[in-house]
Amino acid sequence: MKRSLKTADLLVLLIVALSYDAGVVYRVGGAICSSFTGTNQCKFGPDNGCFQLCTIALKRPIVDANCVIDGDGTTSCQCKFNC
Image (tube, rainbow, N blue to C red; front, side, top):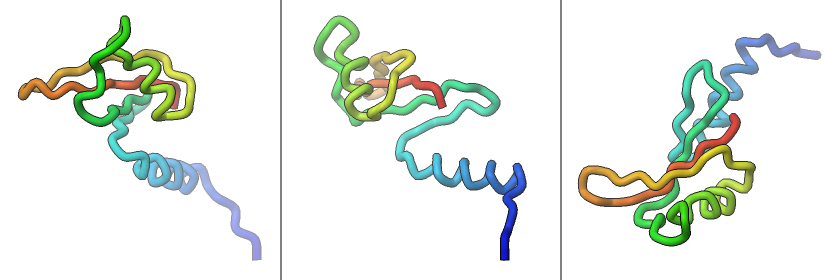
């Protein structure tokens, strides 16, 4: 018995697979995904160390990396990469 997957089935599988990547936020209809590292990690280097930290943490090419500070002063690196 052979089952062919429809485009909708593949899309559901892709979304489910991506949802297991903790802390990742996906922009609908776009090619850029964004993930956040652990807290209080951007404190060193010219870009607060985020670019290197994102590359190491995600093990993929990074498009952009920034230090993000939330309302209570907690910092984390926002890693942007091609989905």
